[in-house]
Length: 297
Image 1 (cartoon, rainbow, N blue to C red):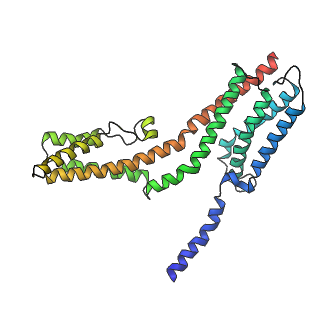
Image 2 (cartoon, rainbow, N blue to C red):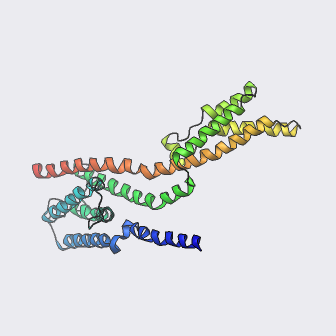
Image 3 (tube, one colour):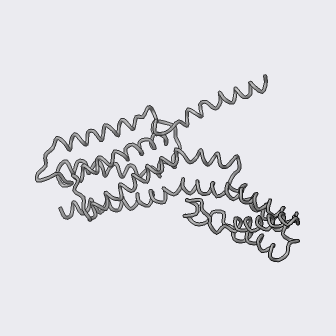
């Protein structure tokens, strides 16, 4: 009964935290989704109800209005990095700010496109629009990975931290090094292949794809497996090599877990290496866009 009571108590205590961690996309009943839809609808209505001559473009009154709204949105959206440094749960909580960041960022596509009047070219104005789309699309990718990858990370870790995974690999390497001492030179070289030519993370492509075609441990395991099988067929099993094979197989499993973990973390963080630099580039292009409009138009 006491155990059941303690378990129930934990469940009750966890409930407020679960509520507090509800998705930012549904913050306050999707308030910012409604605001963004309203802003987009208003921008479409303004664009549809005006008839600039000779054609819609950023230099008309409507274009200036939508451009001012778009520029204000871009500047405000870029402040989320500063907002993350301030901890509060009040009206402008980080969750609410993030929700607004996502939905108003999407509405920016409508506002900026209508601001241009669909007149885009190979110039600083087109560059600003392209950078804006890169920022928005990379942000959408970020939302997608944050919705799926943390659960995969948690399942793969199996309560082990990354340092613990790496320490497990180092422990297996120490066991392999000790077990290889009695082997002859050719067999010991196979173990050395696992010890010296085995990357855990590897390059970006390997981390993203999970492919390690030149993995020293995999090559060593395959070679030792072939020797063990051959000696079993000949009726001369070798306990030392069987132990080495067992350790190599354990290292294969530990490597797979660590590599999946690093790969998932890379995918979780990669979008920021596009999103953040593209945001700064967008701000620079926006400044050039605004200055060129006022100086030359």
